[in-house]
Length: 437
Image (cartoon, rainbow, N blue to C red; front, side, top):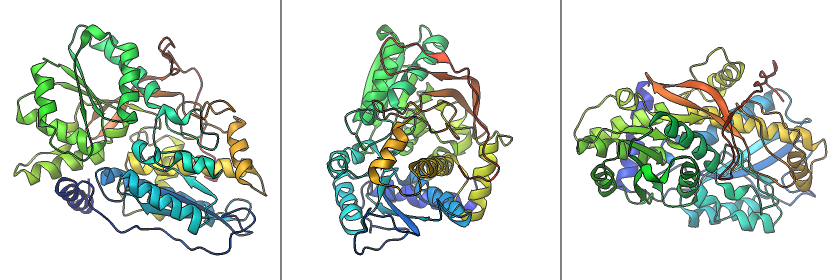
């Protein structure tokens, strides 16, 4: 981790500990309202899209990098001719991971800025505050940055993107069942659909007799000492976490404080090694201790649905690293940046498929047609007229020396209790030489 990133992470960590939902001025990469065009946000030269993002607040560490990374890929696309000659203009506003602020900024984007679509709105509790509004207004709500299974159906204009938490939970649960038979298992999870969906998937695979304790947290209360103590008291040997990065780090440090040393299995949401390592160092420093973040992340088991950053021979990693170095070089090239660029690629692919004269309904139809390439994802999407979920699979990874190392094949499954977890037999397509869909 470079020195400037450590400094930024310490500053963010201080903000999280001092005031998890500290108010921040709404920020935007660009903006501007005006007379609403025939198709909102679409002109002869521009595609205007918007998003709500946690640029401050408890989810800011790591996640605040995502929108800038998406914008970096859009700048790359714009420099290479745009989408049918139109340049993408991306406006993202800070909601501080606070649903009440999400409702306000999304209405601003739709009613004042007249965006064409909401793209990659981040967070399960936050996006649930606006999903019904966006669908009633028939605004495309594409590639939500949340694996809640709730996006899969019931919202005709909304689409997930990453693997949903039930599928990911089943894949992690199958690994735990296979590798930790007879061990006492504990769950630590965010007390909303993010956490409960993950626990549902885990519970489909891990025998109930092995689960010794289930502990939840709310993201506005950093005192998770009681949860750590309860997990230790229950004799938990393997703790499975559905937590945002700040709370993964807080649990790890709380465990060290009470002399509890379980194996950590963490959802992809909360296990980016660079983000987590920086938070561990920053939080520990605030407590008057010095730790090496990479040492504390060593051995954490997680899941991954994009290529690992350590796989420099992967053409998608090479493409996104090139984009990062040109348009987003101040940010660390970590999993959050990779996520931001990869989801932006999918959006551009969908816009190309929507045609030269895109409408809002046309974008929805383009995604529902099921013709999107899996792109940087390690498994295909399951988009159809009846399923808006997203990716169908992931691999197991272990953090070693600050990077996730893939263990075995990519696994695919569904969201049902009896659906098998099976190896994916397909292959990931290479990135196009132009870097454009």
